[in-house]
Image 1 (cartoon, rainbow, N blue to C red):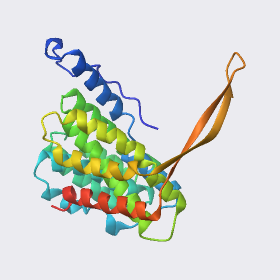
Image 2: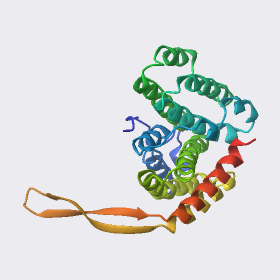
Image 3: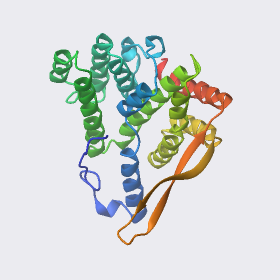
Image 4: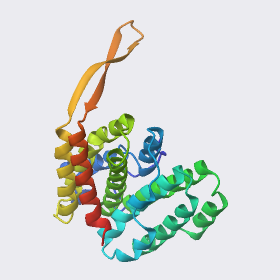
Length: 280
């Protein structure tokens, strides 16, 4: 579950005269999307429960952190490294976790987030290396704090890049594992379910990209969304409940169907988009 984080209804220093009602609606919509998308940690846990395996070779090496010089690349790769670190942690690859946190500190310093990826946090990680759940909590804390701090400082675009980077890396890992080994129907299902996250992320980027500065990542996410939108949805009766008046309310269970060919297309596009930011 995501941690509860209290945010202001509008940005710090907000001048009501400079925002019309449409701007307010867009801000609040973006804010709600921020907290509806799964974090890299949640995605990693779902992959692990689906029977995913560990493959270090598909991750972004921590030493690449020095290659990212634009704020967009740095923010995307903060998200990606959080996803990689979570993935390593869930498989108890703790030495790699330490390396990824060091990479996060490098990028955090560049984006003035040094107060989040601190030496104190690094020490907590070192002291809890054998406690997988504790490490996951530390990663989650850093992720949500970074997002909140960026939003409160009116750096919503950077926050969006972080969020997008984490989602893209998580999708890349999951789809690579789903196409690169023995058939795993549950893992394939988890990839297919990313259709809804792709829809939300596309909407968020459209809101944040009013000046065209995020055209590249918005285009890449929308190309992925096109592939997801081609997936068939099957609706069938799900759970039901009875309210206080004795009325039975039936919920629907929606299953996303994905062929092997569609999975492979998504995996190729996810890798292409991911590498456009990571392989510098």
